Image 1 (cartoon, one colour):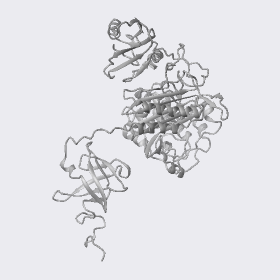
Image 2: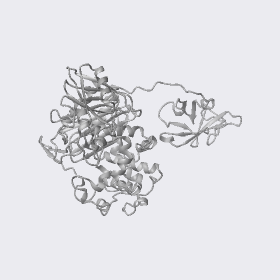
Image 3: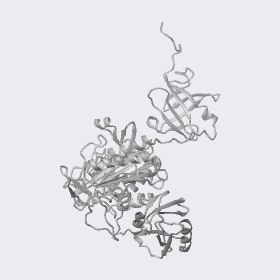
Image 4: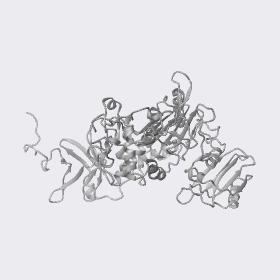
Length: 605
């Protein structure tokens, strides 16, 4: 049958109600998505006589006939049903390739109501929706599932589930959910809950706190890429009158602007944003505490200023710009400024007793760009893929790479711990691997997003408690578990398609002074230059089309490498940012800076 579970089904959409009879424990439905979606197979797991709802566009009679051919004895009944606009707009979206779907999931996808109760939710439960269904997986769900055809091994899945189970139990979290991404796909989701049979799925919202800052940073980087601003611009150039004087946009992104960490007055995370209606209310009388650019000083008020900058330059509220420029293009339909059912309630856990206290869920108002958002493990898994690879619809790969490049001076303890900050991203080293992402917290909630580019693995961890489990450590461990148990399989080696003799001539051994370097020509059309022994500076270089090359990494990033030839056309040396690389150590035939002693190499008598 042709499933068209797109966000806009149109008037021709029908609701088919499948009644599985005759003891058929499962049915396999073939689905051909529209051209923009890949072919897929949806597996519906159900007991006999369970009612399942599926939206489709195919003629009902044809659907029934094809279904009966595949599952003899099953009975298909169809009814024409007008879908609620909000259901189509918010919840009826394409299903991923190879997705495993339980009956409860489909019922909830097709029947979620847009309204939500205002009363707090029980700990470990998710908010009930207006039609009476619990928007969660069936109580048969065991707390770990795969969501990709490229599933993790059972042993890896058990290790992941064990890690989050320990975190939820020892950290005393009412509920804890996690997801793992590998190769650009969500490959595992797990959850633990204090209420039996109510484990949240990947569609349940939690508040993500300061992970919101990374979204705000992406909006600012988009403005830079469009030429609207430069990161070296003082904020006052675009948003005058804030009192932060010479602080630049880059310094605000990297928390090095010297702006105060918090707003004056009552604790802003537990009080209504209406208490701080203007920027002046957020900044106070002395917003600057440190000289700009000298110190990494984490600042919620700094990201409030960046949100105001986005509003000023876009001429629209931060929430609207976010939805239009990030959430919609990336398909993050469950990431919202306000909670939308199903969502978890926030709780404080008594430090000396196993008791709970509901936390208020305040609208942060002016400070929304620093920590307002609600999201899900499913949406943050998609966001992790974007932060690792970029997406030209939102922000290209080079700009995303720039965001995860260290941009803040580290304090001595940070140097020891291998922790620093980029432009809207936290960076740290664990076990020789560079990890990046962001953490978040607000009263009642903890959140963490951790990405390893080297391993092509990311982890999302969310909990609904004010304090308790260290989600940063959990995220690191989830990435490590997958990376160690199932190491990334490298791409097959492939030779060059064409060999350019002039480029091939560059390959081989070179010397910078007496230091031996090797230059390789790679199949992607780049060259790499690095030391043959010990430590030293190295980089990949991309061709410029005129015989020169530009460095891509580390010390030589942006530097020009120029092969220099003699009058007869033979290769003399390489000039790299004024450094001369020769075929022999201190080659007397090359223009070595400072010259070479005419007596040449010698011994000691």
